[in-house]
Amino acid sequence: MLNLKNNFIKVIFYSILPSPYQRDLFFELSRYPEIDLTVYYLEPACADSPWPEKTLQSYERILPGFHLAWGLSRFHFNWHFPSNTQADVVVLNGYMNLTTQLLLKLQAKQVPCIFWGEKMVGNSQGIKGKLQKYLASVLNNCYGIAAIGTQAQQDYQQRFRDKPIFNIPYYCDLTPFSQNLPQRPRNPVTILFCGQMIARKGVDILLQAFNNLIQSGYNANLLLVGREAELPQLLEKLPEQTRQKIEYAGFQPPENLPKFFHQADLFVLPSRYDGWGVVVNQAIGAGLPVICSDGVGSAYDLINRGENGDLFPIGDTQALTQHLITYLSNSDMIKSASLAAINKSAMLSPKIGAKKWVNVFQKIVI
Image (tube, rainbow, N blue to C red):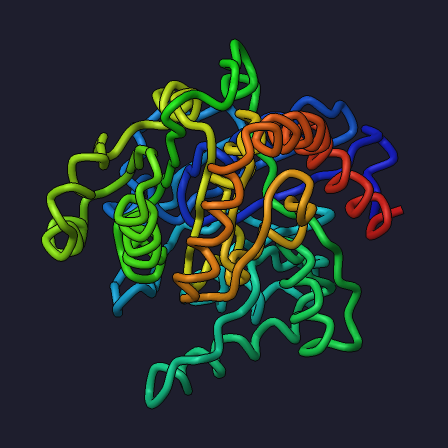
């Protein structure tokens, strides 16, 4: 199927919206002379991810359509589909929408289709759970699956034993995070969380652990960056002494994030579930030791326990508290973990991710 006349591989991506992190990868893919890239987004923006709108590249398009929301799920309905029959490979990011369902049911037999996704969540009950199971069945039509991380790869290997499963995590440009790094640790140590202030992200777990530190006499600050959501109610439960040590910086556009990461000495992502968690990439790029719950997908690919960070069981406040105490009590540990994070970040550039995708495309079409 390789277009030998022009010596390129025609690739079409369908993604939900123009995430700045996916766009870093697409830009690097577009620079490969052997790849003819087109990217279609199902919507231009999302209230849950209010990134500033940026000018689209020549290879990017927004499909006309609309979506319906059901809890955290979004079901997209699009039209004016381009012809995919001239493509060599089609990549689809997300299956919980009519658009992807139609593409996989109507065109997967004509063009090799790759599904690109995080670990599947199968905990929903009732009608929603049945709907998720039904929609996921369409992935049987795919040629293969590009799993976002080791956990997702293992999950899909169990579900789709007859298909090739590729491990291609998220990659994003870490250059702004890795420049002009400060000396760490500082006194007092600043702990950073970046994300929505919601239960799924485990913010309540972090606040409880931080309160344990302050009430035990440790000197530390907590910096929170992200959408406010449930934060006011969570802060009300804390003593005034602890609240005085917490700074909330609000939601920040991607270009502002590096300065907040540079203010920190430790990064914590205590999510109850995170399919990947690109903020871990960013924290490592900024040279921060990272403490994650074992519900964060990226932790299994990006954290070497005891070197550049550590993991704790989901919801275990005492375990998180102990990890924080260990770092606060040992400045040399923060220094060595910071250096290990910087070294790790060299393997996380979008150029490396783009090369992985090119290798997959070549396996399929050549």
